[in-house]
Length: 492
Image (tube, rainbow, N blue to C red; front, side, top):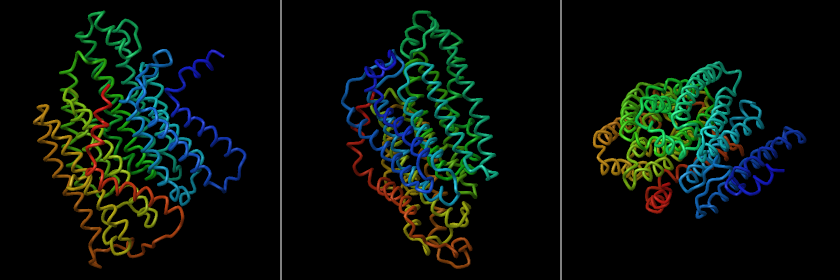
């Protein structure tokens, strides 16, 4: 009864999450009592749950910040916008899986349960206000990601991906918990984020060597989730071996959730170690931008190429986190992350369609796709150009705002390297686009020559996500001012 009253009193702060939990239970009940052949209801319930959660979250936008559940969960505009981004990722990714699941004969219910549970974990992670909730939410998200990456059990590459992801993910979680335990001890036994900061002042431990140990351990743990160099080793293999809709999901939601966690921990707890964590993140950003983009040039698999490209992209996003002191630092990071979600998922939507028609993800096999499927070829080209930052697409305005804020804050080296590596990235994106548009018969591979368009309903679901992402990747930059104003209103 006490738990019921607690939920009734504080439930409004997690009402979007409660809708997802209800959707999860509904999926389980329908799976238990209904015919497995009719899977449309499962997708419908999942998407309706996500859309309703987004609507409730937007309705709560103007509500006052509050801390609920005895300090375990914090609600403010900052974590609301990250929760919105996570819900947006899931809503766009589920349509990508419809035809893929039909072709690979995977279990539908379990797949959607893992997607929704990972979404739930990511949302709780964005609002977690104490160390225990942070760890539980992070593991809820991580475990579902591991299971999704190895979901095609008959695929050897998928089995390899889940083993590497699980082993390295478990190691990084252990290191993260080790850092959190140092914070708990140094603060005098506090677990809430703000109370830890106050405890460090009271115990005079905010300049102790133990803070360095905690800072480095937490940076390593978060660096793994963000795929920062040198904690990126799992990323190419997981991207290549996992089901493509899962890669689209993991590639964006992990970065959104981990970025929300990093900004809150660094900004609240390590406020007194500002120069130290700035230096650490600057080094990681530089390494990620350089190595991610340079190694992407040499890849022959488009999924591995996008894995290294995503490593470079998170290097750009770190510029916004590092320049938190400026008025637009976090706003530029949030704005670019929104654009990146559409650009990245749009790219993977095209890859899902191509791989289902041809069974390959080799870059060379995309040669001449425009002659067979102009819509997919043009959509992929637009998303890649936006990722590269070509004007007047959304990626250009997002990078321009991000780099401008970094330059205004004095991060001249970071911005210079970011600009140079953005130019480098355009090379390997244009290389793919050139292959897509070629009409030379001798360059067109048998995969494209035998390419057949499909008129199935499930293909239409993929195209809906693709169209939404392509339009957003092309036009969001033009209406950027309202997005920036909303992002600036999120500072906690």
